[in-house]
Image (cartoon, rainbow, N blue to C red; front, side, top):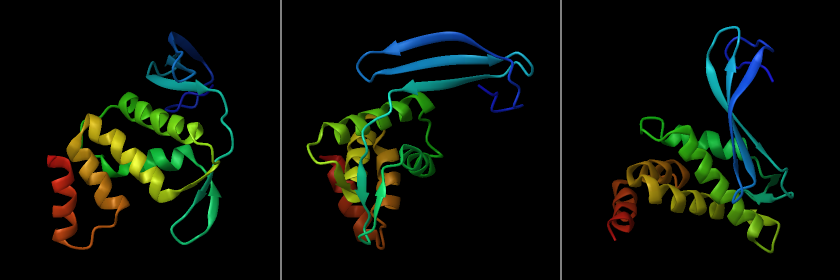
Length: 149
């Protein structure tokens, strides 16, 4: 393991927690060179999930791409990285629990939106504005009405 800040190999684990529900291990690490701390997650590699994009292309599910999309939408919100990891894990669990190993990107967006709504409605609206590609104020108003119910 390398320190993401200074790239040193001198890193120690200072706390480890296993989550039986999500089959992940969370490790708090500290770099012995620069003394900065960071978190890593270890999980079992999942089964292959194919994503059908809006234009019809098919690509392999990319957890990091989903994570970047969420962070891009909520960058000005106060959600922690742990909260986003939990959202991503919940979405992955839904995808793996499906009988079909192929899923539409629109469905993944809806799963993310559902999970975000549970923790931050404004963050969910921001995500929806990116994922649903709002073009007009009416589009935003329709989405707002969903959140007020």
